[in-house]
Picture (cartoon, helix red, strand yellow):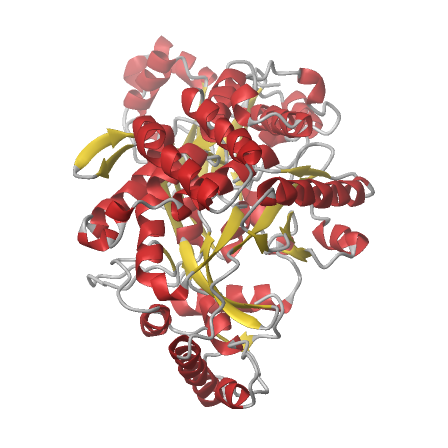
Length: 616
């Protein structure tokens, strides 16, 4: 999509033209398959590296477009959010030292990005979800100002006709609504590509689905959002919900999210795969394709199938089939979209090698996997891996097997065999798969992140703990050691900016509140039990309307019989408030001037936290 000028297809006068182009592409694809025009060798691999940009305070940077212009290299492209960029690596044949060569190119391109970023006081972070992203970084001004992103956002909103809703439950819970697709910009991945034999499509694709869960379990690296511990790979749930064109209703609707794992084994040819995609998902975008793919075939030209590729680019299966052309020959490849970015390029290449090795090392007994394994077990394995990571137990060969055992006893030997069968150098195989072995014996990126964050939270409030966590990630990536060698952070307070403190750095977000219709005696008792000095009072619309303080409690304790009825009759209603983005200095001055010890923190009429003199 990034290479095309796109328009909304809905109510577009060129819709009929687009449909004809799409159907012509399907006809052309069938012809290419029937006439055995697809390239079958050499098998190539490729990858896309998404990464985050942070400023000197470890917060998301909005300098993506300036950095991209400074780099001026076709390997780089923009992403949805202004704090993300992407690198497209060169596809190379699967043999010899292909993985170490790809690793070298990746490091070289990241070094170019690093040099360009430094001009704008910006650093690069490889992580599935950047810890320091906050809700303010999801405002529309952080969307990359390119028409295709604006159009995609409008389409999702128009199709849903209601704001996007996010509900992800792990150790903590996220339950929030948003008015754009920018939550998708929180996610960064290391998307890997493997060319497959189109005439072995059914077996190859179904095998990629069967192994997705076990591979994801050892590669998770996105356990948190907004300081909440959610899934071990929160990206899976977050991306699904951020691009969901379905709105909830009172009907039992069987439609599927555009970000999906699928609902059945692949059946038939690669052409059937694309027919299913067109049948299951409405086309959203239009681009003016000047040529007819069927006519191009008659002219002995390889068609680009632009209409089909455009449609495919808006259906985000975790294992996505892609059509492409290399050296004038068409090919089919699987794009693995579920692997997260980071923690290091060493880890990423090891993840890729594990996946490619297992794909190529499929034993004969796993041919026709769709006849030997229930699809719902494969799907369950995938989502359990996203939730629980290395703690997952998988349904495999009719048994329930822990993640570590399945990888060590079954899948790693397959990977070694598959890579050796393709002529990959033993030195490379042993180096990168050893990283996977050490990770199985220690911890992966998500576990390191969670343990580090919990340790930091013992001494720091959420914003500062997330800042220190991000700084430690950057330090580990600069050293280049794979995640199994990373130490937990010590919490270097010198990395925290002391000069530009905002209210959100110090406020408490978990606040006990009451409603104006509640019993005043009950709330005073709660204040006693919990030793709470301030209780914000909300109305039925959950707007902030009042406040009870320790002074009120002391008055109650002197004369309990005087206080009866509802809070509405006793609470303070003339409130002095502050916003989370105001400075700490302003909060301190307000408390001094007004002679108070507490400021409710508000967004409009809604309470988002509370800051007290003790916090300061």
